[in-house]
Length: 187
Ligand SMILES: [Zn+2]
Ligand SMILES: [Zn+2]
Image (cartoon, rainbow, N blue to C red):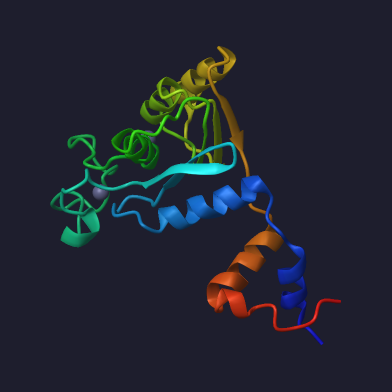
């Protein structure tokens, strides 16, 4: 008899939103900044156009390699004195699209963290119309400015979560050789 987890593996197929958010969570694993990891995936017509994660500019030493973002500072975001040396995940994904000549007009972006004001402005100007994020970030005046862009009809902002059952299935896929999972007959 199949274990319960195997039954879940058979039954829980991610929605498109969950699929792209799972890819986004994987992209975040590539983060090279000691601030919180963030992933971004730009999608259009159910196709991935570009991906990104937060870290130092291309070619510059990684925060994780040197062991700090600035001397005595563990995080790029921990100081008011030093500007952040990190490029945010959304900016990196948009830069990757630009570098490879891929239009982002009319696309959507999935991010593990709600875009900061700078990234949201960049997203809007890149023609990206929908933002799906996992965790909220903006507060106070920044949240109000975000909302003003939404109210102007420039961008749609929506918080989404991957369901517990799909995450359970993802764990199963990640923790085992994926293509050996259907060993048991389906009920
Ligand atoms: Zn850093
Ligand atoms: Zn940002």
